[in-house]
Amino acid sequence: MSLRGRVVEGLHSAYGLANRLGLLENAVLGDLFVRTYFVYKRLSDPFATLARRQPDLLRGGHILDVGANIGYTASVFARGLAPGFRVFAFEPERQNFERLVRTMRRLGLADRVETVHAAVGATEGTVGLWRDVRHHAGHRITTDAFRADRGVAASDTVRLLSLDRFTRERGIASAVGFVKIDVEGYELPVCEGMADIVAANPGLVAAVEYSPAAMGQMGFRPESILDFFLTRGFVIHVLHEDGGLEVFDARRPERHLAGRLYVDLLCARQPLVP
View 1 (cartoon, rainbow, N blue to C red):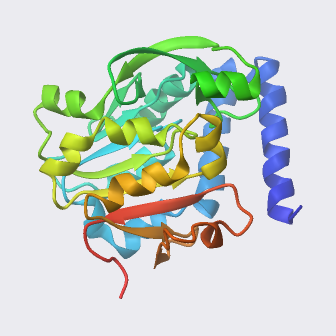
View 2: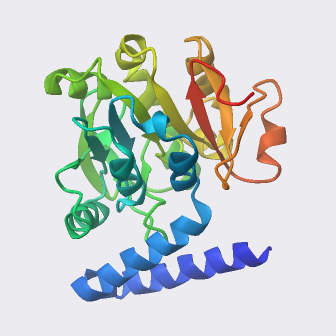
């Protein structure tokens, strides 16, 4: 295992222990955890660099952050927004959502970020959520395939909504500029539930975590998420950790993974690299 891998594994183990002991329920320790996590994300997450290099990508309309976790990406997006628009940050897990709300207030971003306590998918209603006690970003929607594969049951039942209906009700369906989707293998239903948004916003840019293993555990074909964007005229790019971009080869996706569990994809209706 690489040095970075050992560090990440150590952080996950420390989080799991602190979580099991209830230490993170303490407001001071919980806030310290959030601050530490944000430092880690600044070293490994591509979105802040992308926002600096290509700021116009975030300035085309409202931003939908699906799988907002405790608010790192929402904070990056909020600082890159064009005037008159907002970030809508969706997070289903209770503890993460509470930290998300507190973090937006602490950073002075609550006026630019609307937090939504819900999971996102293709339909409306409720859905089971399995909580990963070792990693706050590892919670999973419990599809039939996931329950069978992992031998687990749902920890909670949470609200489920679709982005198409949400944006219609807010009156912003034709004013969405950027969508980020990171939902541990449940990305396809999220996309299926935003087909109208995609059709109504020709300048839309979508960032999607592509993890074939996680998608397979959920019962979805990894190719389906690629087909969703390719058949709608999108060019798919790989978004590297350093913020760099390259065109994604959908015929040989494995070469972009190179032994990793996932890559971030950036989908736009025009090439973003020469």
